[in-house]
Amino acid sequence: QVHLVESGGGLVQAGDSLRLACAASGRTFSNYFMGWFRQAPGKERELVASLTWSAGTTYYADFVKGRFTISRDNAKNTLYLQMNSLKPEDTAVYYCAARQTYQNKYSYWGQGTQVTVSS
Picture: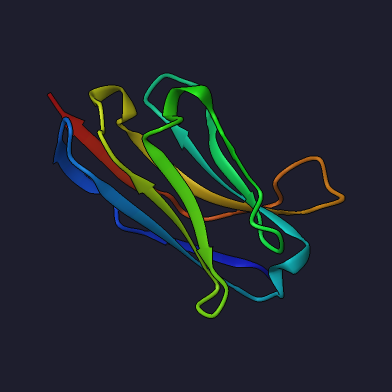
Protein backbone atom coordinates (compact mmCIF):
# COMPACT_ATOMS: atom_id res chain seq x y z
CA GLN A 1 0.00 0.00 0.00
CA VAL A 2 1.32 3.42 -0.97
CA HIS A 3 1.71 5.85 1.90
CA LEU A 4 2.32 9.57 1.35
CA VAL A 5 3.11 12.05 4.10
CA GLU A 6 3.49 15.77 3.39
CA SER A 7 5.39 18.27 5.49
CA GLY A 8 6.76 21.79 5.24
CA GLY A 9 3.66 23.94 5.13
CA GLY A 10 3.28 27.08 7.18
CA LEU A 11 2.47 30.77 7.35
CA VAL A 12 4.68 33.07 5.31
CA GLN A 13 4.55 36.54 3.83
CA ALA A 14 4.13 37.37 0.18
CA GLY A 15 7.44 37.00 -1.64
CA ASP A 16 8.76 34.36 0.75
CA SER A 17 9.69 30.78 -0.07
CA LEU A 18 8.67 27.38 1.29
CA ARG A 19 9.70 23.85 0.45
CA LEU A 20 7.16 21.09 0.79
CA ALA A 21 8.22 17.48 1.13
CA CYS A 22 6.30 14.26 0.53
CA ALA A 23 7.73 11.09 2.00
CA ALA A 24 6.57 8.14 -0.10
CA SER A 25 6.62 4.52 0.99
CA GLY A 26 5.11 1.15 0.25
CA ARG A 27 6.16 0.71 -3.35
CA THR A 28 8.93 1.20 -5.85
CA PHE A 29 7.90 4.36 -7.65
CA SER A 30 9.78 3.96 -10.91
CA ASN A 31 6.48 3.46 -12.78
CA TYR A 32 4.61 6.28 -11.10
CA PHE A 33 3.59 9.83 -11.78
CA MET A 34 3.85 12.00 -8.71
CA GLY A 35 1.93 15.21 -8.36
CA TRP A 36 1.36 18.20 -6.12
CA PHE A 37 -2.22 19.45 -5.97
CA ARG A 38 -3.77 22.26 -3.99
CA GLN A 39 -7.22 23.21 -2.83
CA ALA A 40 -8.17 26.67 -1.62
CA PRO A 41 -11.34 27.30 0.40
CA GLY A 42 -14.39 27.24 -1.83
CA LYS A 43 -12.40 26.13 -4.87
CA GLU A 44 -11.81 22.85 -6.62
CA ARG A 45 -8.61 20.94 -6.20
CA GLU A 46 -6.12 21.74 -8.94
CA LEU A 47 -2.90 20.24 -10.22
CA VAL A 48 0.11 22.39 -9.44
CA ALA A 49 2.97 20.28 -10.79
CA SER A 50 3.78 16.68 -11.64
CA LEU A 51 6.78 14.53 -12.30
CA THR A 52 7.55 11.10 -13.70
CA TRP A 53 9.56 9.38 -11.03
CA SER A 54 11.89 7.46 -13.33
CA ALA A 55 12.71 10.09 -15.95
CA GLY A 56 12.08 13.19 -13.90
CA THR A 57 9.98 14.76 -16.63
CA THR A 58 8.03 17.66 -15.18
CA TYR A 59 4.82 19.54 -15.80
CA TYR A 60 3.75 22.85 -14.27
CA ALA A 61 0.46 24.68 -14.20
CA ASP A 62 0.75 28.09 -15.81
CA PHE A 63 0.06 29.89 -12.54
CA VAL A 64 3.26 28.51 -10.94
CA LYS A 65 5.65 28.39 -13.87
CA GLY A 66 8.88 30.15 -13.04
CA ARG A 67 8.10 30.20 -9.31
CA PHE A 68 7.70 26.55 -8.24
CA THR A 69 9.99 23.59 -8.84
CA ILE A 70 9.07 19.93 -8.41
CA SER A 71 11.83 17.42 -7.79
CA ARG A 72 12.50 14.06 -6.17
CA ASP A 73 15.23 12.36 -4.21
CA ASN A 74 15.37 8.73 -5.24
CA ALA A 75 17.49 7.67 -2.29
CA LYS A 76 15.05 9.16 0.20
CA ASN A 77 11.89 8.31 -1.76
CA THR A 78 10.83 11.90 -1.24
CA LEU A 79 9.07 14.34 -3.53
CA TYR A 80 9.61 18.08 -3.11
CA LEU A 81 7.92 21.28 -4.14
CA GLN A 82 10.08 24.36 -3.88
CA MET A 83 7.83 27.40 -3.85
CA ASN A 84 9.38 30.82 -4.41
CA SER A 85 7.87 34.28 -4.75
CA LEU A 86 4.75 33.14 -2.97
CA LYS A 87 1.55 35.12 -3.44
CA PRO A 88 -1.57 35.34 -1.26
CA GLU A 89 -3.45 33.44 -3.97
CA ASP A 90 -1.13 30.46 -3.38
CA THR A 91 -2.85 29.96 -0.02
CA ALA A 92 -4.30 26.46 0.02
CA VAL A 93 -3.95 22.96 1.37
CA TYR A 94 -1.28 21.23 -0.69
CA TYR A 95 -1.54 17.51 -1.36
CA CYS A 96 0.95 14.99 -2.65
CA ALA A 97 -0.49 12.31 -4.92
CA ALA A 98 0.68 9.29 -6.89
CA ARG A 99 -0.59 7.17 -9.75
CA GLN A 100 0.86 4.44 -11.85
CA THR A 101 1.74 5.48 -15.38
CA TYR A 102 -1.07 3.41 -16.92
CA GLN A 103 -3.74 4.97 -14.70
CA ASN A 104 -5.75 8.05 -15.61
CA LYS A 105 -6.44 9.18 -12.07
CA TYR A 106 -4.25 9.71 -9.07
CA SER A 107 -4.94 6.81 -6.73
CA TYR A 108 -2.96 7.67 -3.64
CA TRP A 109 -3.12 10.88 -1.62
CA GLY A 110 -1.41 12.36 1.38
CA GLN A 111 -3.24 14.10 4.19
CA GLY A 112 -2.30 17.58 3.00
CA THR A 113 -0.30 20.46 4.44
CA GLN A 114 -1.57 24.02 4.86
CA VAL A 115 0.24 26.87 3.15
CA THR A 116 -0.89 30.37 4.07
CA VAL A 117 0.59 33.43 2.40
CA SER A 118 -0.17 36.79 3.97
CA SER A 119 -0.06 40.04 2.03
